Length: 82
Image 1: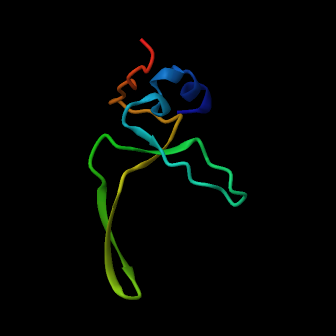
Image 2: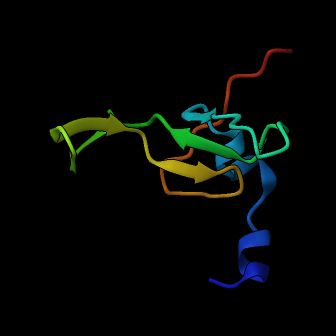
């Protein structure tokens, strides 16, 4: 999918507006938060293992996703104003 097709998806249907998307707000080297990075909390975190100097380590994480990402399971965030 090219950028033109990606940008044709309505803003409200992208991950940043989904109830499962959570902003990670990690900071860059200048201390500025990245307001486009988050993770999807639709499913439980995915476990993975890796080797460290002290032996195997097991962790779990939610999939990272940009606020402009999208999938087939989008559900709009509830409105705070009715």
